[in-house]
Image (cartoon, rainbow, N blue to C red):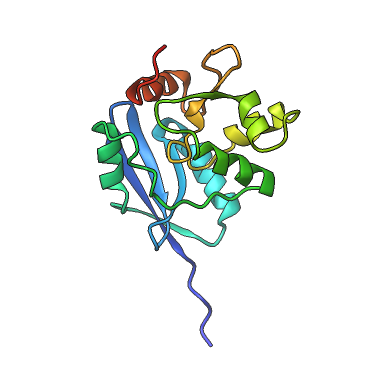
Length: 171
């Protein structure tokens, strides 16, 4: 019986108004990783650690239309994008709750902690938010400080600010 071949992921490079996005999908078109080219080495290391048998090939992936629509102003374009994030049960719970934040709205880390039923876990929620492997699709940029400040975003605060303004958040 022949050995199973390793799965192949596609790495697509998509130009956006705020930099080149790195979009990694599996053979079924499920988003597995997302980042910006300035964080490519970190993303590639993350993929190698979590998917050691995966072959990563560059090419056009299936999410180009969703990205084009989002950056053209259809801010709900990612709502139906399938994604899979490798993480702990707690992290996945936080990421699922992030998906419930509508475009054009923000919440605080404390509110996010309350929403998942862990009101004292604000720091843990922040860490889970920051370890989101499919940012933008799972909109971690919609979480801000309790005082309304733009705190942390793996892609840089300049991108967070742009994304929130693009989605209609004033500030």
